[in-house]
Length: 285
Ligand code: DHB
Ligand code: FE
Image (tube, rainbow, N blue to C red; front, side, top):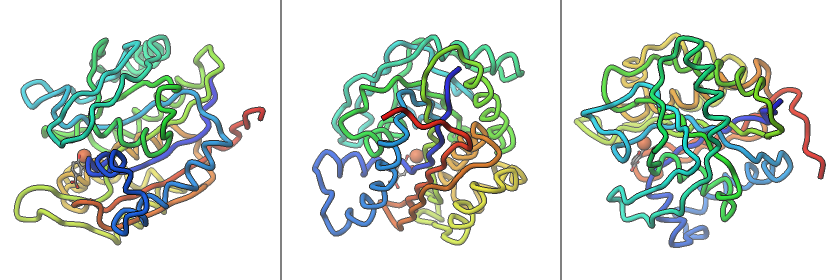
């Protein structure tokens, strides 16, 4: 039986990848942001996950507006990154876990989520940046399962639907016949809007409320529609649904290990939330 050790929600702004490439960890603009990740890495060093299941959204690298699955699950032995046009260095491939992927796909389809299955899948900054922040230099020791949620081409899946997908994935992880120690990541948000007359929009009060609500009462966030989230958190702030899916994959009760909030990174309110699964056994050290 695989063990879910916990979940992490984190923002995924491309500029973070640029700052990592240029090692700007002590730069005055970047230091307060990067410092927020130190306690997360300390917890990960104790919790020792070897597998990552990540809810994220693709921004046009693998899926474009012409063909946009609502939910897509990677089922590859390897995931490649590619140039998205942000000037970021292309990352080396990540190791997949096809056996676990197919188990999760079976569970998702069995629970009436008609997902797209991807035996080839390019992963963009939304996937690479969280791994760079949380496992610097060790990203390729992990095995990964990317789960792409459409937050780009309307109509978008509702927060309630994303939460249910997360619950389905969480239950399926616990019935997987393996010894994996799984970290679930939700990548995106918090509030931001990159386009239109509200470009630059940030909603600090809502973000801070989410960091609180996601711990103890995540189902409250499932009351919103996707369009409500666009209005409240911005047209890209709707990426919060990836955090909601991550939270759905965890036990009802969790321990909050750490949270961090920093405005702005590029146009985004950068958030981080680290949750430990209740009853997650610690790895032998
Ligand atoms: C930015 C934020 C995002 O979530 C993204 O995918 C791309 C850019 C930004 O704030 O620059
Ligand atoms: Fe994004």
